[in-house]
Amino acid sequence: MRILAFFKKRDVSVITGMALGTIIYCMGVVWLLDLGAFYASGVTGISQLISGILERFGVTISKSIFIAILNIPLFIIGWKGVSKRFAILSLSSVALQVVTIAILEYFVTKGFDPFLEIIQDANELPKQGGLLMLSILGGLVCGIGSGISLRSGASTGGMDIISQYVSFKKNIPFTKFSLFVDAIIILLAGLLGSIEIAAYTLIRLIISILVLDRIHTVYNYLKIEIVTTEKEAMRTVMISRFNHGVTIFPAFGGYTNQEKWVLETVVSSYEAEEYKNLARQIDGKCFITYTAVKQIYGFFNRNVIT
Image (cartoon, rainbow, N blue to C red):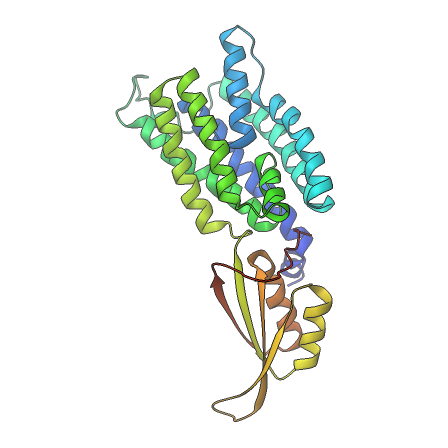
């Protein structure tokens, strides 16, 4: 029970999610995308392009070096424009990326890639449909890794930091900004590589977006309704812990005819889990419902991930 309680603590959950998501993402990049010569999204994709261009001139530099360099100015933006905690978590993710990618690339140079059989048979001949399978799996694995990190309240660094910034500060949707950057990467992939590679990269991107849409909910909103008898205690903790407004109206239990209260609020969906935990601490018998909110009109506090 103590172990379960330990992992329910928010900071531990965030760090665990960040580490797990980052490692999964790196596996997808090195074992799948690099194997098919496809490109990842954001800073990792840009780093792949730079590394590939230099390799044409006989200069071999790991993409992990460029990931580290390109993330330095983005870390500063995250620190000043989003939150220090989010920036530190993103920096930790980038550091873990650099180390993990370097280690995985080393083993690949020694001939170890568990997905090599997808594109080559036992005689090292190309398999039909192998590249298509790599692009699908690459999108799936990278999407899962990014989604886990973002859902936990961290990120995989890079464009996730910029997307977080423009979402909160400029009110530009996360998906629109990310798609714009990815479109540039796909265009460059076609110009510098081949139309085939650009097409497989596009397939990888579509799969990643679909996976992220199912896992990642940081930039969406939910309406929370809490039915409880502990109106004042619930109102106090919701107002003190969060800076979202709360609407309260009376209700009666249909079976018990007991007087109750409904507390209604709209929150960023990454906050929903903490609302639930706090509500259940106050009233273990409270009834909680979540409803997806597509648009908000009027004043709404967009809290940074803290």
